[in-house]
Amino acid sequence: MDDRPPTTPTRTGLIRSMARGFLGRCPHCGEGRMFGRFLKVRPECGVCGLEMHHHRADDLPPYVVIFVVAHIVGYLILELEMGYDVPLWFQLTFWPLATLGMALALLQPVKGAVVGLQYALGMHGFATLPSAGSEGEESRFGPADGRTPDARAGLGRA
Ligand SMILES: [Zn+2]
Image 1 (cartoon, rainbow, N blue to C red):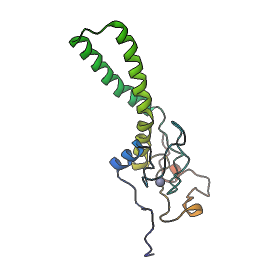
Image 2: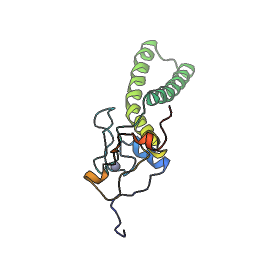
Image 3: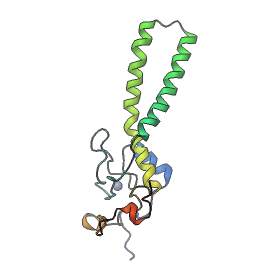
Image 4: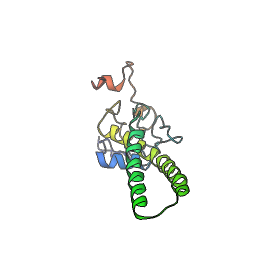
């Protein structure tokens, strides 16, 4: 058992996991890509085999994005309105576009960070990690008994 595996068997820390997710990378190895499409998380990491299909980011990323973008845009609108004489047509054109752009730009990184958070805390099936140094069938740690990793880890409570 002295063979050092190419992938680490230990869980990545919270901050690093969320940072990797924010950058669209696998929270476990930091190399594989998290997203197949814009907001579609890949079933598993192509590099280390971490299963990601059981994440439950759900509505949290939009909530976070709305919270952040609204505070930034709201503050900037107030600052602009108080300090400068900006024409109405500019306000009506620029701010909706800026809001839309910021929201779309933040949505995927925030969702990645949320998935990284769930991974770091071992939530929703992230309780099990890929087998160290194995690819293919040995990294398939799916249960033979049909129970979800949540159920095995006793995390099935809603
Ligand atoms: Zn990975």
